[in-house]
Amino acid sequence: MKKTLFLPFIFLATSLSAQETPTVAPQITTDSLSKSIGALKKDIELIKNLKVTGWVQAQYQIADTAGAKNFDGGDFPTNSNNRFFIRRGRVKFTYNGKNSQYVMQINGSERGVSLVEIFAKAIDPWTHAFSITAGVMNRPFGYEIQQSSADRESPERSRWTQIFLPNERDLGAMVTFQPAKGKKLYGLKIDAGFYNGEGLAVPGTGTPAGSTAAVGLTGVNGLTDFDSYKDFMGHLVYYSGTKNGKIKYGIGLSHYNGGFAYQTNKVFNSIKTDTLGNKVWTLADTVNKNYKGGYAPRVYTGVEGLFSITTILGTTTIRGEYFTGTQTSKSSDSKSPQATPSSTDAMYVRNFNAGYAYFIHRIGKSKHEVVFKYEWLDPNTKITPTDLNGTNGMNQGELQYTMMGFGYNLYLYENVKFMLHYNMVSNEVAKIKGYTYDLKDNILTIRMQYRF
Image 1: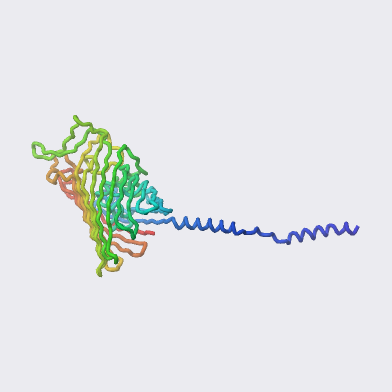
Image 2: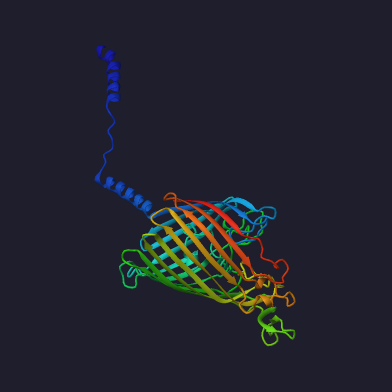
């Protein structure tokens, strides 16, 4: 009887005792700890290999006249001679793997978000001097194209670059030879590759909304190859300097050999003198040769040079490039086509030369820099201003342009740069409608750049 009465109390005590017994934590073994640490190290290594950089260029511009056509960010809207806009808003992702690299760059502005470049690079594991790059990248041609827009001392690349090599980048593959620091031939770099030739349309870096397209193709997210021809580009440079870094120098040579398919037999590839003494375009012989579907040449050669010296007065740099060659384009301009030419457009094969020269002086050890830039583009070297007499059918596609830019840069902080640049543009005066005088198209640019 007593045993029966005590049974509930025994059960209750046993239950309470079980509840008070602490839960035993799972044992952490050396093997599981090693795996966790290994996974953490791997994640940290991935983060260390990924580099994120970027810059934004917010600017205000004033033109001499409303609707001014220009290559300092695109034509102004018809009824405006001043504007605020984001010239570039870049974010660049670079992942450095073992003997390899991946790069993707995006541009964002009030005009939209678009891809700027995306490519992969593989480096040989033995000498580390050879590499292969494939994707959308800067064209291996000249100094100016390779220089980042965040580093450039003036607002934009030269007019020649924007017309002949629009948006600087193209889709293709390239082989590079570049010895590492400390190796023989260090300072030498050779690039050679094949590309589609159309370039890349980047709406966010082209013409502001409401204006006429001057750079790239507004509203186009990208371009595809419109014919079977591929363009070759090669770039050979050697840059070096003294051990103390006070003198730097370099020289380079570039070559571009490409073209596109003619869409018509209307090809003008020579200039002759008529019975009145006028130089006129002459239609190519289409009786003995069919041009349609054939090769429309684009052949450029460029030479570059740089010399920089640091003294008690500061750092003075003189840099320039000269270009010459053959360009096929329409009658009205010298632009390289970024889309299939019309079957009704005649093509004109011109000889050209162009170039630019910089004088840059960083004052002492200060944050102040003054800049002078001179550039020109002569799209047709076979004629003179007197040949543009209004009676021989030649038009604005033959006009020569010269530009003089005066600038001041303030490197306020490590990340912040202010730019003040005035570009004076002069066109060749000729008896051509709209060009009987020097157009009022000078541009003042005030820019703030933040870079990280």
